[in-house]
Length: 218
Ligand code: DX5
Ligand code: ZN
Image (tube, rainbow, N blue to C red; front, side, top):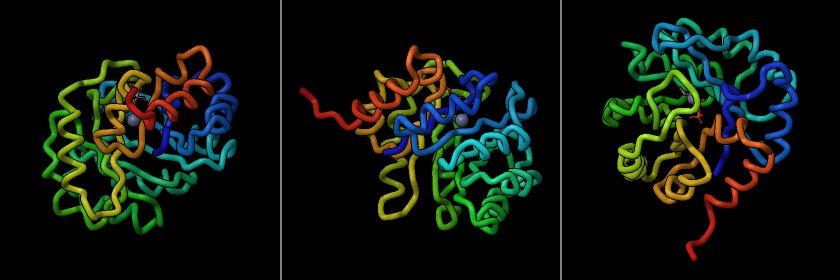
């Protein structure tokens, strides 16, 4: 299992330190939320800031594009050194083409699905996918409450992906209370923003999440 802290909830005045802290604690991925104010009602970071993050860490940079027509910007994000790019199925009319572009840059290719989007939209792209991101909040903001109806969706996704080398990632409202249920449902990669960076001790929270997810029931 992999914890991918989302820097959306980090202190941007000392971003490098925030990233180093969670990576040292065992977070193998850093999750980068890119929002354009069109696909989602919020604007965040772009390639310039991500270049700065790349310069501070060797961790896997997991770039979640919440932008319209993501195929137009894949090269810009690949150029600043991300390791994987995830695009929303709802944001492009040409999902297969966009995923192919990501693969052509030698990066891991992911598809994100909003809570209301059915799993079958990825059926004919599975051959070129490395990751399926199941949103457990409506994308746009950190600190939202986990949507419970996503849990059966994860279980169905796990069955759909049996025998394939595709990671299941969950993003939104992940915390110490629900991480074990999500792990048991089949999640491989856990995005956690506010539960990590708004906690008193982000490094300790990452360590606790890693332990809690795989803990045995009493
Ligand atoms: C939401 C973003 C998330 C967000 C998660 O649109 O995609 O990655 O940062 O934040 P939390 O963990 O606070 O829900
Ligand atoms: Zn995200």
